[in-house]
Length: 260
Image (cartoon, rainbow, N blue to C red; front, side, top):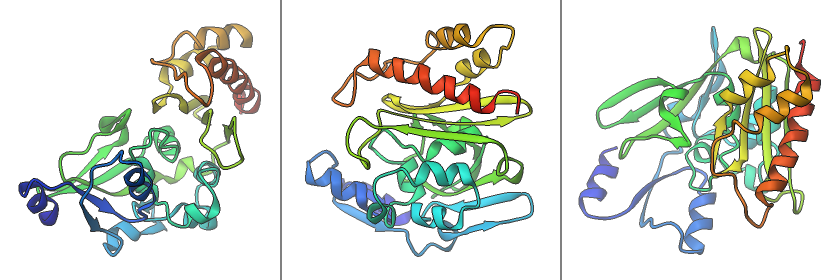
């Protein structure tokens, strides 16, 4: 934290560094202004990946490959193993993905679904926050603040789930849409990446698709009218096509999880 503060005072542009994949990628195309990298890989708290009494604890420097291999939380594993390719996942950290500039940030979806608790550190000390208090389109970090750990309650780890990533291009390309969903207390929870220029927990969609007084077709049609904006329209797919794909994905989620 002190190094970050000192370099900012010098009018330089620091960034925390663990895997480094995004820093390298964006610097190559001049989309990231960073001239100081602060290596956090040896911070012990950022490297914890273990089950405790009531929680799974995941440090921000844990790689996506490690998440896949240990597989404490199958939904998180399923989401993470679809990000990039194996070589990249050996370097990409869960904290780097969640805090990244590339807007997909797919690794955050299971954390949003499980109301996880985040540990954040700054020169002012340590604070813990429910993810929904500090994540709105992106993680709302204070200047120089660092994501240290995430805590997920054990009760979520064995819940019925589904995760689907739809791509327009090659097998390891960016997603058209990624959806993740699980059931809790008889209700389906849904989080989405790639539909908008930010990932989000789809609370309005959840309320609609859990309303079994309506038939499935009506629920899905209504849910599509209760999405945040803007809907992306880019090289991966048009707005209309994304909505068409999302309708199919919502049907798959309902078919898989309703009544579980």
